[in-house]
Length: 289
Image 1: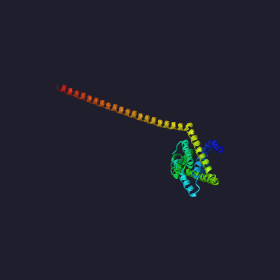
Image 2: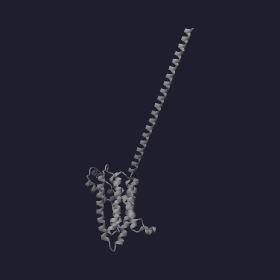
Image 3: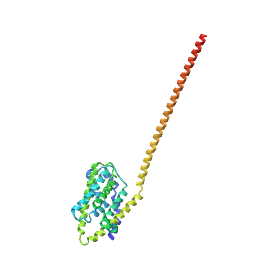
Image 4: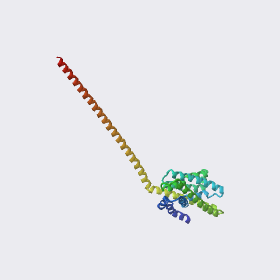
């Protein structure tokens, strides 16, 4: 219980360290590809939520082929969203993505405790499929952090991804060694305690991220900025539309005035011509008389 409380007390501090610091963002701006590999590995090693999920994935796996299958599914999935989301600028609120990642930790611990059979009386969904789906979310979480650095090239993104894989391998080696040490007569008791720790940690992280989402007003400011930008564009469009209508109205009015002027001018000419013609007739008549 003391260890559990210690973990819960330390998680907020770990949570703050998981964000990409301003100094790291500044360093990544002019970093080389080797540096991006380092940053990727560093982010994975300090990514407590990713590590907790990986612990849950490999906790009961002792066969190397099974470990390879699950880790490959997770790796392919997070590579897809990490690379493509970052390259095409697809993003979402980091708090919400991290909240879903926290839920993946809860899910994995609950599944390891055989919770689906105990509490819902049915088998859990396909294990590899769920690892793949959550891998997509984890990769998207990595992407939202990486996108804090602007103007990234594809080579930089790929280098960061390679670093993530190196960090993941390092974490898995350590986790697998620790699990190998505790396997034995007391493993069942330890497994229950460990997976309950995963569930509780996941709940804590979920609450932590949701609290961050509802208390951090930066995403609301971004939303307001987007609404203002759209409103400003609509306003400019309306002004341009009104200006065009006024311009067209002025041209129509001017053309109408010109048309009337031409008609008046033609009428004057016709009237002058008729007067002249009448005057000639009167003159001729007077002359004849």
